[in-house]
Length: 542
Image (cartoon, rainbow, N blue to C red; front, side, top):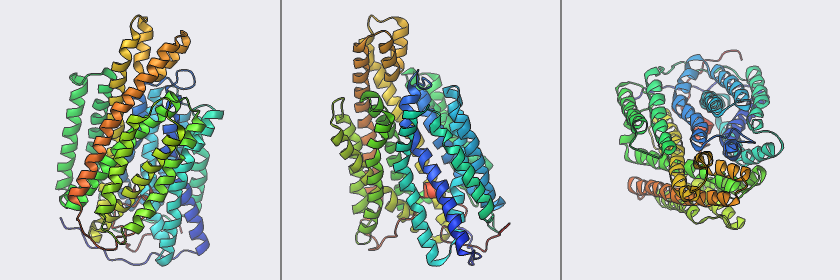
């Protein structure tokens, strides 16, 4: 397919002081999104507790995590088109309003169902915010100032990754579980005020058509697929109609989505790009990696706070090495690919990431904390060395007029990998746990058996209520066994991603690869235009 050529002109200059204030507002919003992406993993164990939380079962927790990511994945490319049509500030401010209201709803949710719905609404807000952030940044700054602004803006990702778990741990140790969502509201309000007062309403003079059919098909397909996968863990069977039917329907709807996008002249999600070997293979590998990251993070939350009994604060601090490793990995890989082809850098790094996921199969109830910290550090380092350079290379190697569409594809594939990773990883854990705990329930009353089968958290609670420490020990052992089994499957999926990179990336390449820009997923490169291409913008209310 041919993309229209776009003739560019420099955006109108803004006073330097105003540019700096705009950058501060954008960084505050980016920090908010990154923190929200990390706090829930710290709160999962508390939400599963029947006394301190909502008593949510594993399936509900999978949905609480996945509903946010699913909305994020399927609405992001539509949000970019909305920004071009109605103005990026308009869409951005709408997203902040949705995010603040849904955070308030999540904080005071009376049950797991309400929390899931509120999290999905938060995902809608994040999807509206994310594409607008980088678009506004790129319209605001020009020349060398743009590169400097991007570098400063990208630091918000690392700060959010490190601060999110610690902030969540502090709030959970001192307040109720809803505080991890309530903290979003004043930050969103402050960002909203700054946005309205400081940011012009940039919009493209050549708006991209909206894609309601694609949006509806992608959402319904992913919802059906995720529902079937999570339902399998709840009923511990794959042959039931309420398991295989939604999985089949989801796959059919996603296939129709691809066919519909193929028929569009300017699709929001362009499947044709997968015909390019390196781009298609690289995106598949990133999707498989994010599958593993989401699943192993889900396990890690229950391992640290449940099996090991860490407080939320201690668990948040224990996860800092992951963020430190990721922050170090991206620039390290950037330096390496200046003198080496991408394949000998990315393939070993993804292989190491897979090995660290498989290493969860060796963790137990008495593993020294230092070994866990080293594992998380290496894991973060390896993941950072893959995501940054591979994403930058995939987008940069596309023709300029295809870069926006390529960013939409990459973002959607990565978020979809996360959604399916949570669904499959949690389902493997649930099925294996139930089988492992069953022998320990012989002789227990029916209500005790039913509650203990739900999750290790429920088993520990009922064990304390009936003063049966042996049942709590059995639940811990069953969870550890389930984590070991799941880690093996997760590592195999990540190894498959490394194999895909090995096959599809060229053995030799340019001596100097592009320096990775901020994570497109969160930095929000608008898929509505080439990432380095700038038309004369329409500006309202300067």
